[in-house]
Image: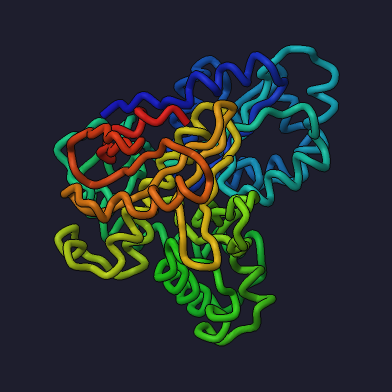
Length: 384
């Protein structure tokens, strides 16, 4: 199935503005497919290939001399030495969009770009497929949560559990070692599974450290590894207090619910029906959908949550030029009065008078209390 990526428009726009563009995101999120489809006339170089990588590392000047018209350099963080040699090439030629760089390790890529190519590179974050891109209306919320959004799962008949088992093994055994010299990979994988069990919760590193059996400094370092590899991210609390003492700890979410489900040991979508983490995983799905929407348009993250010290909370606050959009997320399929309690409390605290509830059902309802109820497949109704 040929899936048209929304981010293609932003990618081509960046290539008209910058001499190089970096497309970064999780492994297997579709970066290579997108850049090759967007720039079919550019030479393609896969730096995962050990022979090509060795050439680039041993003789970067000679390697780059083969691409005087530019090229797509895939997984370029594997050859950090090349960035210093790219700089004079870009400076000597005023052509825009010469090199398209892709990478699945944000820390290594940004470190090298900031040292050698600052101001010369435009950034695009490409996450796995969005609901809008998939267009498979027959899948339920539970099926989407379990299957996740990696393109390979929608292009072929693949065993989902085996796909994620291999994904986790490849990530842990290869990518993790690129960033940190982590020797006990079994403990690190257990740490990943514990993080999956804390989706949508306030991040308490001390609690995780006790369970894993390492110190807080190690947990902080390992979280940075998972963030750099686009496995998980922290949703920050909103900075305005609205005259209340607010929680200042971030919440933890995964970039893909299929990966999180695999780490939680979920083996099929039916298992989610009564699963204690179903609500958290549905919340995760919706939060990442809004993140994909912003990244696909080349916008900043600008997503937050809000919680005060007496338990009032809004799951998601989207900050835009048009103001704040508050969003509550409910995993139920039937609209009940319970859906509106948090939003009505938020209206009283913030002075705002409009908000959204996203749920797992199918009907749009615009209520007189200022709240619009939106099915999870219709998120474009919210302009943020």
